[in-house]
Every structure is written in structure tokens, then in C-alpha cells.
Length: 470
Image (cartoon, rainbow, N blue to C red; front, top):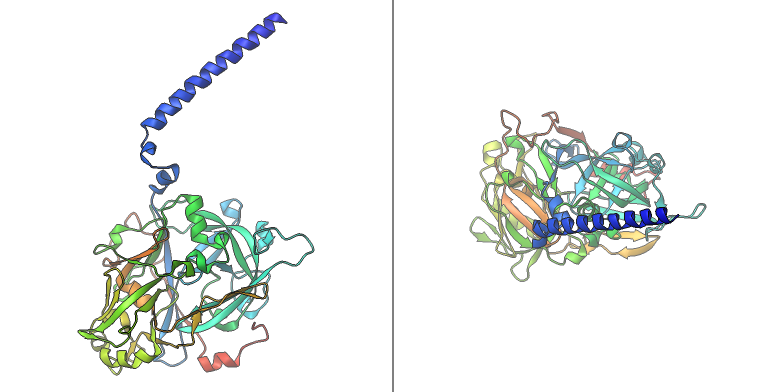
């Protein structure tokens, strides 16, 4: 017994020596490592670069008339489910900087607008239903529900009602070459149980990934990008590239930074106003057409909402007529005339000036006439309303004295959204002509990524609202 005891003590002493040596080696490595200069493991993971997701452009016609304007949706793929990648559910979603939730069509919904799309199944992925506070719903008890208003200044607003589900959301496998691959986040999403026919019946997507700041989300666990940067160690930025369609090329969204090669000049940063409200909104100090300063924003500054859900430039209703006259293209005919208008300048807080040419703010209709991509914002319009368990949790934000900075701005400016510093960077986008050979960032999507979908006219839409409307 004494021999065994001595042997055990010797072994314990030996292990202590080994442990001490290994500990000193580890401390030496840490002290010699750049981590001691303020870097962290998360910072090192950020050096892997952004996730770059290619987007397809889906076009809808806002009416039956040949001269009716088109609406664009830029959609990409996500995968859902805390299972092996091959077992995840894939859905086509619209990335929306003007909302704050992940909202998915689901098998819990039998409304006509739901049945036309791919439907997410929480049962298939084994995801639990939770209440608004994130606690799992006990069997046999009713769960919290949410009703969320989704507003786009150039299409009819819609409502979605749904339950809360906690699941893993991953950026799709259809990535750009050279893009990092680890990009998943556990979030509480809204699984739809009902949705209005408009605008969802003919919408070219199965769900929405809201990228607004946390003020637009039910809570921090609902914010996809907030959860993504915490889990995946990404830089707290995402960026949207929308090529001018006349030049070709593909749109893309980058998570965890931006691509400098998409820039033709430096980024200019504008601070976000009232970030606690959740909108990516900036201050518009003045508006000029050519050398003429318009009356709008003279007496008090305006707001500009940077919104990827809008295909047009939303302008205050009382300013629309003055702007149309100043731009002078309303009755023009032909491509050359439609691209020969004066420049439109929006001066933002922080010394940032956005300059749009007729190539961005106008388009030629099927009849050859020139459509100005301007949409009036009525004083009574609001955005961002949501209800939980039949209680008003957020009233919509009034859009009076506001501009919606939609696709016309994205066409000209590569736009970077900084989550931590609460600022938006605008830089002239580099030329988007497709290269003759593949670059490390190109994806494998077919070149024809546009799709046209004919929607009903506004009058017809109102006449077909079914009993499934909320």
C-alpha cells in the first residue's frame, strides 16, 4: 500500500509540473500575440472577411397599363434549421433595411398568399414555439402572437400575423466565390399564421429578413444581423450593391464588412438620426435640382429613410409637383431624352451630398414615355407599426417631411450600414459591366437573374381581398 501511495504522489507531482510548464507556455504565447494590443478572438475571426450573397432581381408591374412603373425586389437564399446543412430548409427571402424581424411563410398558414410560396415548417426542424419573452410555450397553452405591419412607399402595405419560433437561420449556400462560409445565427422568427393578399399574394419571395436596427425588432433576440455579428464574429457592417441595369451585373449583399473593389471613390459617412427608433434614417438638409434649391427642407430639416424595399424615391406629397417641373422629363419620349435630365442633389448631415442623374431617377416605359421614379408620401402615412398579443407595442412613425431613399440611390451609391457606429456610408459604385472571365468573388448563378411578375391594378386588388385578410 505504501508503494502505491508513493507512486500516486509522484504521479500527482509530475502532472502539476506538466500543468505549470504548459501554463507558462500559454502565457508566453498570449503575451507575444497581437491579442495583447487590444485584439480579441472575435477580431481575429473578423479578419476572415465578409459573407457575400448574390441577389436576384425580381420585377413586378404595379398595374396593367403599359406605362405602369416596375417594382424591384432583390432576393437571396437562406437556410433554416439547427440540423446538418443538407437537412435545412431553403427559402427565398427579401432583405429589407426598413423592418426588424425575420418573417417566414409557414405551414401554419392556409391563407392564399401563404399557399403560393415555399412554407417553413418548425416541426421539420424541431424548433420550439416561444412567447414574446423567449420562453418556450408549455404544451397545451396558447402562445403569444404578433401582428406586424409592412410598409413600402411604392406598393400597398400589408399585415402578417404569426407565432414566435426559435430556430437557426443561415445565409444560403449560394455564396460568391471567396466568401467565408460560417454565417448562422439563432433568432426568434415570426412563423406566419395569416397574411394579407396584398402585397404578398404575388410577392416573388417566401419571407423577409429585416435588417433594421434593434428598435424595429420585438427584442434583441429577433434581430438577425445583431445576432449574426455576435455569433459569427463578423464586423458590424453590411453593404448593398445594386448595379445599374443598363450596365448589367448582379446585385449582392455583404455581411461583415464591404468590398472596396465595389467603390469608385471613398465612402462618405452620414450619422443615423434617432437610431433607437430602428430606422436607417439620415437628416436631409436641402434638395437641389441643378442649381435650383427647392422649398422643401428650407424651414426645417427633412428625414431620409434608406430603404431597400423601395424601388422609387419617396418625396413629400406637397413637393412632388415642384420636383417634377424642375426635373422636366415627365412628358419626354425615348431613351436619349429620358437620360438627359438635370442632376438631383440631396445634401445630408455630415457634409454628404448624394447626386442622382436621370439614369437613376427615371426610366423608359414600354410605350417609350419617360417615367420619373418618384412617389408621393402623404402626411398621414406611417411605417414600422407592430402589435404583440393584441396590444400596441409600437405605433408607426409618421413620414411627413420625409424622403425614402430607395433603389435610385442604391443604383448610384454602394451603401454600407454600420451597426455599431450608427452611420451609413455612401460611395460612388464602381462600373458593373460583367467581366469576360470570372473573378474570385463571382458566383455561379445564371446570368439571367431578372424575372417579371404582373400584379393586379390597385382597383382590382381591392376587389379580390379574401376572407383571409387580417
